[in-house]
Image (cartoon, rainbow, N blue to C red; front, side):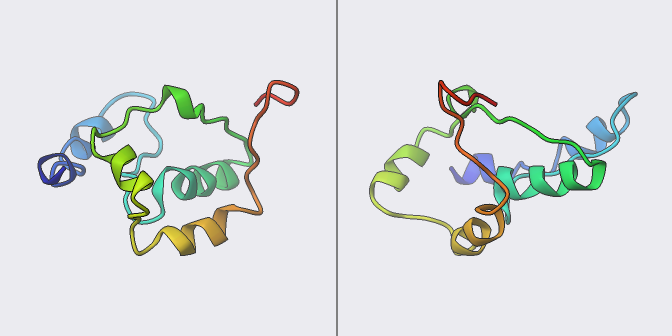
Length: 93
């Protein structure tokens, strides 16, 4: 876990040089939902994130089952809960 989280910002400088890249962020702090909301709000767009398609660090699911969350998770949930919905088979993204 430490090895992965200490490398989060290293690829940013290289990725920013690619043609067509207009925004990028790591997902620390406000997480994937919080950062996605900031980007889509600024661009006046919407986004669909498919939970099953996300890559997970091996320990993450164990942490969730044990109730271990980041300090910012409560603030992030409060910030994103009014702007997100859970897709279902009847109402997909």
